[in-house]
Amino acid sequence: MNLLAVLPILITAQADVYRLDLGPAHLRGKTITVSPNTLHDLRSGSSATLRDIAAAADGASFVFVGESHDKAEHHRFQADVIRALVERGRSVIVGMEMFPHTAQTSLDLWSLGRLSEEQFIERSEWKTVWGFDYSLYKPIFDVVREHKLRLTGLNVPRELVRKVSRGGAAALTPEDQADMPDLDTTNAEHRALFNAMIGGAGGHGMGDNVYAGQVLWDTAMAHYALRYWSRTPRTKDTVMVIIAGSGHMMYGLGINYRLSLRTPERILNVLCLDAPPSGTTVARSIADFSFASSAQSTEGP
Image (cartoon, rainbow, N blue to C red; front, side):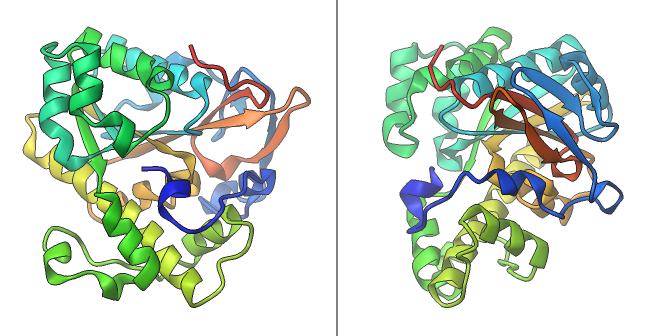
């Protein structure tokens, strides 16, 4: 569910979003310049490898890998992170923003190898519920299929987000709210991030409703991630990799924040971003690790 298709706002890809004074206090004010095709441990400010990410995830139950939806390099990297965790001996669950939680049957059949790619695309309603070129995400689905990993959808039907973005939280009916935590719109840091993502046009009135839609989105995906986590067999090596847009995880203020309110499980945050050849400056508080792809490349695999 793409925010551009759901909410009546324009998300602006401003470099300043990468340099906000938000996130963990001990890293605020610290920056790093990243270049295309580089991976960094933002906690230390040093270069990193996929093995470093997998090692840093030891003891973590949730690993977020934020993306730009139209960047093939981001999805290849996400698949590489999943593979690195598998190679480290983790039992990986892949949770995806791209599917509603109601698509679980189709996702299970894909993991078990019981659907062809064409059947999977059709039965999961990929073209209507997400709409981005399937080939962009194919590396993720391939690694899920290769290792028979559990795959789950985290999203809500888009009409719910649309309803809240137009009428606020009050627009939800008792039936809508029956399977949903209360919406808390009081996090000032998250509101500041949201306003920055929409070019500082948060405002009031309709802006408040649009913001409530974003909170619904993050809250619901945290809810469905935790519900799947609690209902599925796990071992000490189980980890859920959450694939979502970067705006849902930057500075630890999105889905990850909503998760942290409800569980003490440790979370690791990995941000995929774009960098021009000259590099781009990033706040080290934006995530635990960053992967920079080329800002000039949007080609599929």
